[in-house]
Length: 241
Image 1: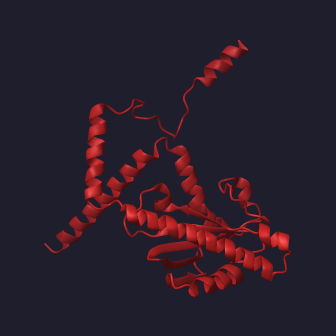
Image 2: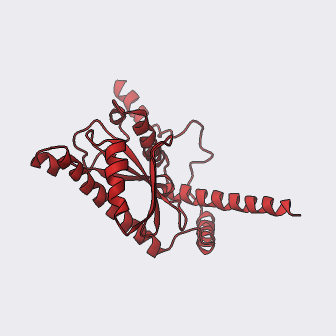
Image 3: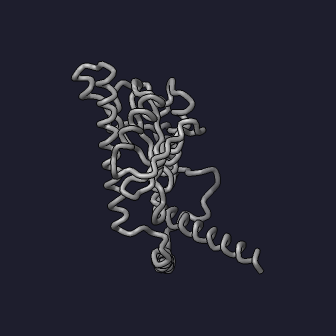
């Protein structure tokens, strides 16, 4: 009897969300054809970025990750850490928002988060030393730090790519490359600004975990954006009629 109960509970399908799905059936051939036609329409309408722009964004993110790693080692060295601790010091760049979900359009900014260890301060080290580091780089333009915002942010363009960079200071001495910031333990002893800065990445991770097919949701979001733009244009036109 016990094994039967265990077996039946194991066969219960996973429940995602609060309401029952409209249908659990897969798409028909007609659905697949129409989806491809819709994706072609979205591409022809210019809602998808070009391959060249996608590559440039990846290169910029890779370069930014290198910079925060150099920055945190400089910070650790300046604070008197020994050679081994300086070598182990690490910071890491995460992305969130539309870019992470794959629903960004051409020219859209990239929401990014720099996660640093406990000895890196927000005002002195991030908005101070790292800001000076970026300001000296010819690739960086339109550098605007906003340390007093509800969610402190550094905005700039890196090789023409718009970046919104947040900072989270964790109660960890070493930031591992495989760090999972969706864990609840990450929030332990974190200040309010760090918690708010982490929220974007944590929510995006939750969406990616809960959605069975992110590709379907991506197309749906693009359609929603397209419809919203059309509605806004229609309303503007009616104001002049």
